[in-house]
Image 1 (spheres, helix red, strand yellow):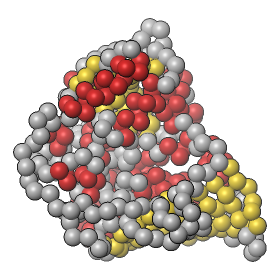
Image 2 (cartoon, one colour; image 1 turned 60 degrees about the horizontal axis):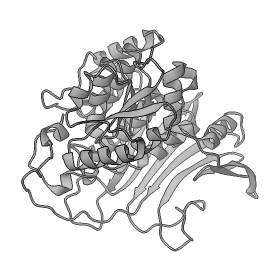
Image 3 (cartoon, rainbow, N blue to C red; image 1 turned 90 degrees about the horizontal axis):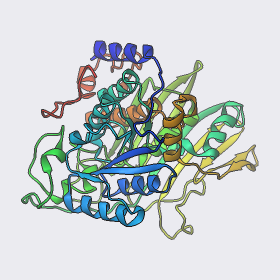
Image 4 (spheres, rainbow, N blue to C red; image 1 turned 120 degrees about the vertical axis):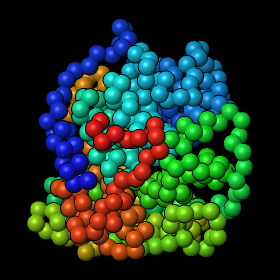
Length: 434
């Protein structure tokens, strides 16, 4: 593993950036949206609103979902996209400029790598990988094939948060010592679901992809797959990756030197495998000084934190999703933009609530090929995703982990390092040499 990651990093670091013409002679960008039941529907909506951008193809393994989306796009645009159930067939279409991936976590990296190899730019939903090995491979593929790969952490395109990150670097909070991510999102029990035949029109082998083949159950399929280790990464890797990325971004570090995570599955007796409550801590050393990143997942009733509440009055329920950054001169709160509170009296300081367009930024950079304009490059997404995987490994092994970000190993812990990758089910194998 150590040698593999070193070689891939070397390849990525030395890859040249070159320009790439669009397949369409008139500069129209033709996008294929993949995995369109839930989040993928937002991908379709975003692209169909853009000038000179066409949703040229839609791919989904569930024919009922696929046909519904094809009808919706045709009704909205007057043109019916190509419909496919096999992602691999999509790659042969030279007229497709980009693929926009919103499939399950365990399919993200392989599909993105295949798309890069086929010469297509990629928008890939968070988290970009299902394990640490894949986080390295997706970056290596983007560099080797000179592709624009945008990560679906939309906050990276927020004008407010870009301003917050800049002001923190300029010393607005003084000496920043802690960054917290909060994912307190109401998640009810999924219950128990029996094994049953695969529904008609569902191409289950393609859905399972790299994961072990298991009997079909409703809980392992639409959305609830998030709560099974074969396909998802729990809420830390679902909603939480957004706040994890912001926490790391605002703290200013890349990889921690030590990780510890504890938690469990509380209250419910159901099929869920991943924890519904988790506290993870990440020790950093930045510019020679110790720093701390703390992330918390809760699944049920919770208090406000620093006034963060998802659009509902205090005490009336809702989610608590956001970030808090602490420094020697005050603290900063992220929730639909940012606010600051400075000094011992916690007087209101700078704030900004201006948003941004991550899909629009992807299309912009596809046209310009200027990576300095890119808000959510895959390199940043991969680094934040590594934190999710380290926390989950610590939780599953029930111990703290030392981490060497240069060699990409847990020193002295071969069991933890072995969990950086997985056994892949042929032919859905993430290649070592992309």
